[in-house]
Image (cartoon, rainbow, N blue to C red; front, side):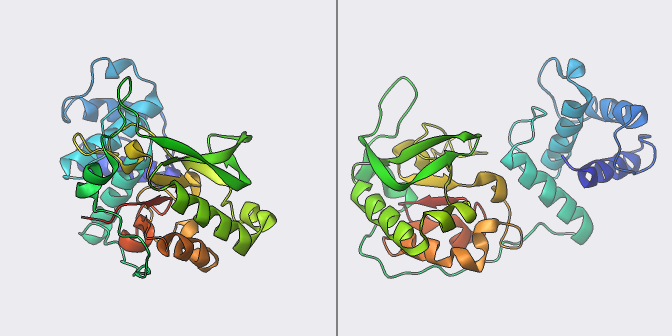
Length: 275
């Protein structure tokens, strides 16, 4: 949460009739008191929110304000994640312009040797998704020509990506071509060695029903801290020109970049066409 987010919150609290003090981007006793008062009037919160730390209550207040405007922040839990980051950005944009952000579409490459299914058709081709404690898709360790650093612990590395057995040959070719094009030193310089996710049996962020493509082992995330879920090409690192060959190599095998297709979630690529 940035000072600009706190300033916005202070201004909105003042508009709602609370008294947060000056909109200075500093969360002091007056702002904390106004946040607590406002939360008591906003949509139902989880039990025990009153004893959350002041910063967590401030995040929850922004989440609740976004929800009140019809913007999905995910659960109102006081934790700042990609969905909350998107929701607050959309809320601030809405207040400033009267409309939510429009994500600029970028036309990806279309020539491909594969015809991966649409997201709706994924179960028919790839079988059941993975659920904790239950079924696991047929996964293969695809060796990487360069070591990946783990995004949440950059001191830790891994030498492979998990892939569904149907996509494993494609992933292997892609990694080889990326390595050949950039070389290991350049890959590290561009942060293309930062791994942020492959197989994960979970729902899509912000959804209560749709399973993530990660649940089949057919999606990958890279360098999430520099390519947040709802950042557009104006902010996302992977939207820069030097990354164009990286995306074109994936697209040449039929994979879909959500960044280049929807101008959001620039960290993500998947073996499924968009519905």
